[in-house]
Length: 82
Image 1 (tube, one colour):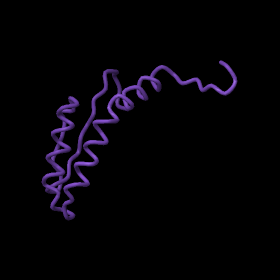
Image 2 (tube, one colour):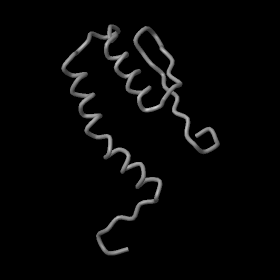
Image 3 (spheres, one colour):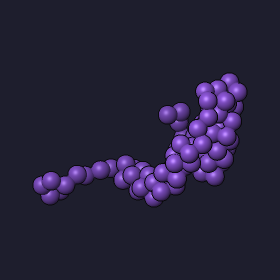
Image 4 (tube, one colour):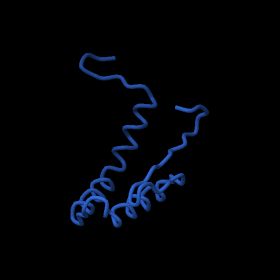
């Protein structure tokens, strides 16, 4: 390791690459949400957009909660409960 460089574990590096690869898409979603504000507890469009985006990312375990809320469970490829 050279002075001034940062060493990251492979898993962290992979996660950072994944985040960087999707940054444009995340920015577009954020801008869309801010362009279409909704009142509290009336976020029907927002909830639908988030659910659709999660489905596109392969998150299939999404449960509606409290009208417009969502709970998503992301299942990893490794065994365990963490």
